[in-house]
Every structure is written in structure tokens, then in C-alpha cells.
Figure 1: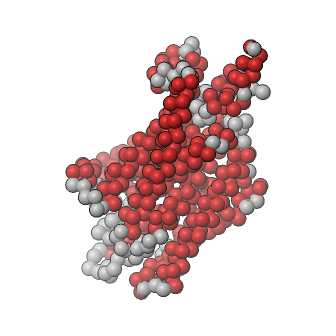
Figure 2: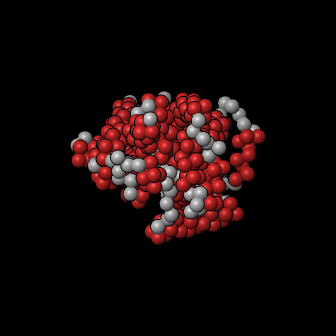
Figure 3: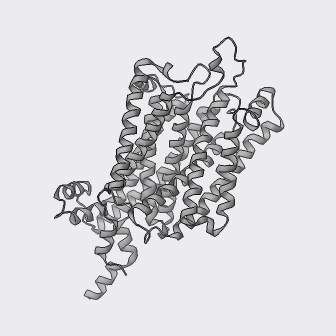
Length: 438
């Protein structure tokens, strides 16, 4: 059995290696490149993008929906695992919380980028109309962000106190920072009781907040009455799709952190087996909603709906459509049905495929519908009949993803990704010490 000191040594944050410094440098470069492209977009206007009167939403909104989905599932997974008290959750929940926080921050930033001029974000507050789902989004995103922050912060308090003591001699400055963040945590009975109640309240709040946020985003689409979006199925359709994207992202992140930080003793094959079953279930549920979403319009469609479906099934977007359906849902389910398919390495590549397909799924939800308006496109530039992101859009989108990864990387660097105190408590070390003293 490991000693208390060994647990702390294993799980305490460590310095960046040379490879990790290169990784951070690459992310910073991408963030700077995106910032320069965004400044040029603000100065020149949205003419530097390929957005137009028909393709009002493009890659930015696709990215926004992806971030919202990723954040929701990370938080929902944490909340469910905390409320049910599953002990196997310990190595996973904090990573999921960090992912959720990084994703929801970037979702808010991405929607401002899509507005063209950042000052227009104020209009959504000054001229808010509660009949509009956009106003609901403006309210729910900050509320959700605050809840996610506290869901991450409250369980950290004991670990921050441990790190304060651990770094007191080697890194006094860092020790002082951990001490302030720990809010004078002493581990008393009263403090533990308040902490447990607070975590439980936040976990209970996060579930409806996340569900409301995901549903509101679906309503932003379905309330427009456009072909391809005019569906009462969009709320559960978006929510089930969010679970696929979120669980896939969680598996990829857990695998990378496990490999880089050498946490094989804490994040085991057992955890990947559990997550593999969860991902397979999520893919099956989303596949069911996809069948519902496309089968009924295909069976009893209007002329415009038929054109839209032909574009997806056999037309311009058919390659992407079948890639996200077969590669992102059917193939992962087949692989994950087998135990060997739920091993860490195989799970990583399956999850990478799922995440890639999930991102492109958002793209084909947004773009084809906008290019099939009720009135035929006529008397406009030929380029307006199609949409593909410009270089500015790709650079800014890449920068958004890099910023999310940078936030995640820095949090993983300075926070213990596996709960130290929780791991110690579950090992029974303190109980054994008390028995030996008695």
C-alpha cells in the first residue's frame, strides 16, 4: 500500500517537460495568430469571412455548439458521479470539470467573435427581449459558467491545503498562492460538512442548468422554422449529440493526461472500460435520434425538404454526412462492443474519430440548411450559393480550439488532476494510522 507521502508525490503538479513547453509554445502561437486575424476581421468587417446573407452562421456557430456540447457533458458526468457516490469516479471527475470550464469559457468568446463587432454583445443585454432564445442564452451561459467554476473549486480546497504544505520549502511563492486559494482549509468536521453540502447543491444545480443550456441552443435553430431545423426533436437531438461529443473529448483528454503524467496506477484499464461502455451507449442513443431526425422528413417530405435531404444523402455534403454517421457513430459502437475495443489505446483512437466526426456534425447541421431557404437563391453573387470557411475563419477557429487547450493545459499543470485527499481517504491510510497510534 502507498504511503500518504507517495500519494502526494505522485499526484502533485509537476514542472513542464521540454515537450510540454513546446506544446504550450505552439498553442500560444496559434492564439496570437487568431488574435491578429480577429483584429483584422473587426477592422475590415465580416467581408473577410465567407459568411453572407444566406450563410449567416458558419464555422463560428459550429464551434460554439461543439463547445457547449463538450462543456455540458463534462459537467453532467461529474454531477451524476458525485451525486451517486461512485468511488471509481475519483480519477476522472476533476479532468471532466477542467474540460467543462475551458469549453464554456470558449463558447462565450466564440459567440462574441461571430457577432462581427464585439460591442454588439452589449445590445443583447440593453435591448434584451425575453421572447428570444438568444436572451435566454445570454442569461444561462454566465450562470452555467459560475456553477462549473464552483463545481471545480469546492472539491479542490483540501488538495490546495496539501499543496501549500508540500511546496512550503521548495517553492514558497507557489505555496503562498495555494494557501490563499485553499481559504484556510484545516479539514475540520465543520468545514467538511459545509464543503460536502456545497458540492451536492452545485451538482444538483448543474444538471438542470446544463440541460436548459443545451436545449436553448437547440431552440435557437428550431425556432427559425427553416428546412432541416423545423423539428420538435431538436432538444433531445442536440442533448444526445452532446453526450457523444463530450464523452469522446473526455476519453481523449484522460488518455493524454494519463500518458504524459504517468498516472497508470490511478487511471486504469477499468476506467477506460467504463467510459467505453458509456460512449457506446451515447452513440447508440444519438444514432436513434438521427434516424428519427431524417427518416420522417424522408418519408413524408415537402419538395424543399427532399432537396435538403438529397444534398445530405447523395449531394454536395454527402461525404461529410456519411463520415459523421458511419465513422462517428456506427463504427465506434461496433468496436466498443468488444472488450479489446475498450482498451486505453483503442479507446483513444475511437474517441479521436468520434470527436472529429462530432465537430463536423455541427458543421453540417448549420450550413446546408442555411443554403436551402424557402425562397430560391437568385440575383446574388454565385459565391453566395455555397459556403466554405475563409482563411480568417479557419485561423480564428483554430485559435479558439488552441485557447481551450491552453486553458486546459495550464489548469492541469497547476492543479492536481486526481484528487489527492480523496485518493488518500479511499486508500484507508488515515484510518490505519489512527489504529496504530491507538
